Image (cartoon, rainbow, N blue to C red):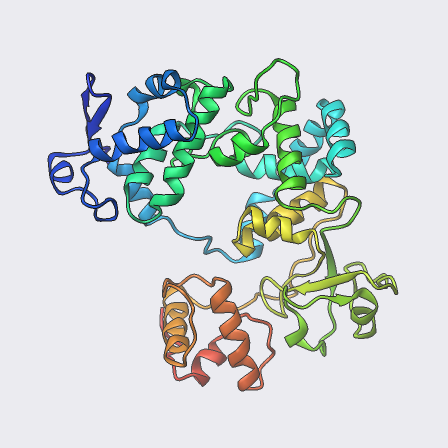
Length: 408
């Protein structure tokens, strides 16, 4: 997609996205053109305590880019099944790189674990998934992305605040506007923090007086640990995810992240560790997580797993990140399903979502992607039809609800 050209108005410190947009303005901003919107945003930043010096430094970068808005509107949620996504993202090379980083920066990792209680493998897994340890942080000017998304009406308030947070980072002296290069969504650094998270949780771990998550590995390690412990409420010394083996007669409706039972109860129902060892007969609460239904991989998810779903609410991403952390920490590779797990096509899932809406469920967007709302609705209908209530949509459920199972 070609990038829309912008015309700089140097004396005003603003740009027009295009004549049409400048004339029509954005509805969510009372019809204001981008220049008027930007002037108001700068006023808001000053009210929030950002200096005029920082605003002036940032002004040449506060330009509208329609291609950023197009990317945001066209983004897709993770649509792969878990074993495919995890196989690619939690590959052996990323596991080995994570272990190597822990050895190379052992002092910073040890300090972070002592200070925040977050294990090195947890930090390293996010570091690897988000940027391949700094190799792929994005190549787009952050301020341009943020202000474009702030002017667009899809998530205007959120990115208005994120733009001001980025200006605060500049004002604090951590990064210059030109150094702010990252993803199209405005995230910064080697673990891809939103500017508000960067401003609130980034810390100077190498002692150079700056919080530099783009170039300083110690700052990345300490800041990520601070965010996980403080914002995501990590529980020191507790597990997050363990692979298990489930029996064929497990009460499948109990396998849900919203249901937490003592490990002793799961053991009574025949759940074991993946290698067949019995679960401890204790009261530690855990959920059974079946990312691909009862025929796919199975995990015990503990209280700390909530940190992963807070980091990214995609179940496939969060489970992959937690799994990669266990691999970096020494756990064995995931046991693959004994046979292929049937997956509905994109169009079949859209058809199922339409049927669920017709049945009275709120599944969010009918987009062919199995989100959490769709999974909850699927489980309810599985119970109704006497199917294993594991939240995994099947051709049988689609047929029972009156759908065309042959849709492609």
